[in-house]
Image (cartoon, rainbow, N blue to C red; front, side):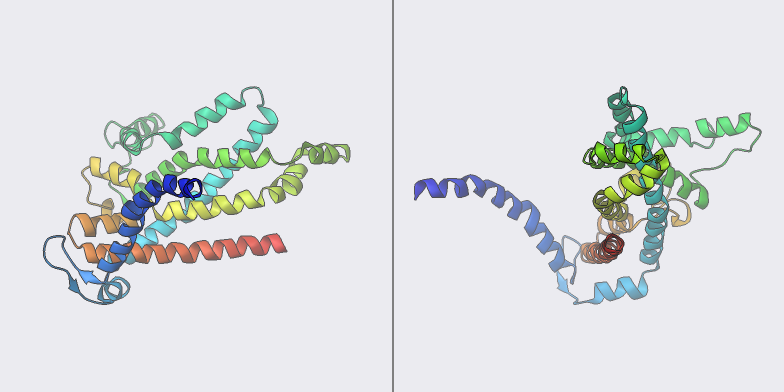
Length: 294
């Protein structure tokens, strides 16, 4: 009996920590999403009022949802295309230097968001930024990158794509390693060109990895917060940048919960985001699985 209980005793600290720092905060935030609470005074139960307010009387929530969706729709295809093409090129044409190039392209993903925010702040500074210096050499007027809505969105899109494409590259490289080389050799013997092998062998065989990449990219895209928050915070901009152009759902949640101290309403925003992520993830998986079945 003692030997049988030993594994469960060894697992007990993990489950206790999970209950204390994982499950309890999730359930507690769900409870307070139905209340009005500022963290100091007593909670007041308000039912679904917070959720009704989100979907009927919070224009900033819809604006943040639109901004997040727009950034996702642009950055995910760019990240996947860059990651996939780079992974294929490293596998087929740069085998000797693949490890070094793989490390170089993966570095942005493991760089801290604070450093990334500082880097892009320096690059796109209006007066002394490197980008405007290059534009000036080309005879183009300087752009107030962090003060104009369309330019601010472009900076965030570039920053997010540059940060995340290396992670996609590593995932696709792991998927490419599972494809048998015999398939490529047989196709080459039959006269297939590189592009034919890429379309008819590589892409179909990478479908499971593609499903994982798309799903996780959607989830991470809706969780976008660190880089734009640090970028525009250091630029002395209001939260969400100029005219809330890059206000994401998580930034809206952060502003409500930790600036206005509306913890109940902030928790409701967080769970609304969870619902949105679940819906998008479900439909993306259905679409990918439908393509696989066909």
